[in-house]
Image 1 (cartoon, rainbow over the protein chains, first blue to last red):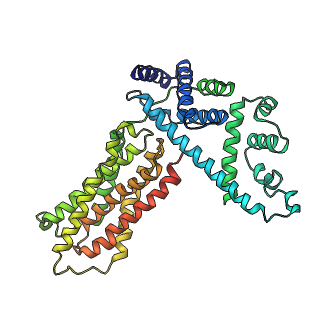
Image 2 (cartoon, one colour; image 1 turned 30 degrees about the horizontal axis):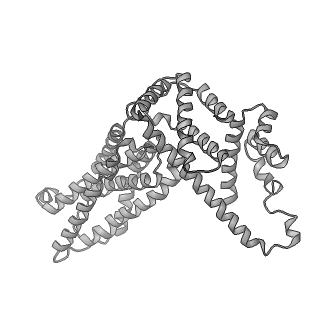
Length: 180
Length: 212
């Protein structure tokens, strides 16, 4: 059963590597289903699962040249999935630690401080302006204007997933810049 | 399936073009080894072989040491290229191939230490050896890192560390074939401890250069 599915996916990938878009779309859809099942045992939030599935699909796309169509496909795909999941969990727990830190500090913040958040869009708008135009606009719309990713996508004529990917890349660059 | 995932799949498939798969690990390794051996040969032509090499070809411990260094070049090179594939090319065992040569190499150094009695005089040029190893290793290291960067390693720390172990093994082997010294204290201090240091540096480089 498993090896049947693997040989089917392997065949789809072999065609995809030759440039067959239909097979590639089918392959990614089947992979997404498998990944969703895998992630639902490890993550509880549905939106989070979907975000990680999307990140893994992008990674599979980026690393597709490392699959030669000879060896089994499923272990290759799950190696990438585990790598991305680990990355995601690392970032998640790092954020939680940071949040825990800010809760500890909260006792020392006076009432006046609360009205002036230290890390608002305003405080990092210079860094945002240095980003590529499209990324800067997306962050502006999300964080200064309060639009959701879906609304931004409609407003600027992009797909929602593309907006998320662009925002994700922008956060990465900003995180690096702010850490310097 | 959610709309956003569906549209992501559609956009990824839309731009799908034929793509050449990466070479197999063995082919990648041979590519790296060929380039590195050519560089090693040029270095040896320039610096020359040690004058007493014919005599040393009859010394079992010298032969064991250089032979195991050569083994380390091969096994750590294979291990590094295997680590550059997300699934380790489904040959996990290949990653561990440097372990045995490394243990035997350490055992050989221990035996040489025991046999170095009375101790051979230490040459005064410690730092020169370190610089030579760096020079002999830099191109093989850069070439290997470049090859690894073209793949998609999910074990980037280890890939970087083992890549630098392979490259510095070439550097140490080159120096061992050209330098007239047999002081084991000197070899450990100025040849093999730096090799460990470079491998640790490789872990950091792996994170910097191979994370994707």
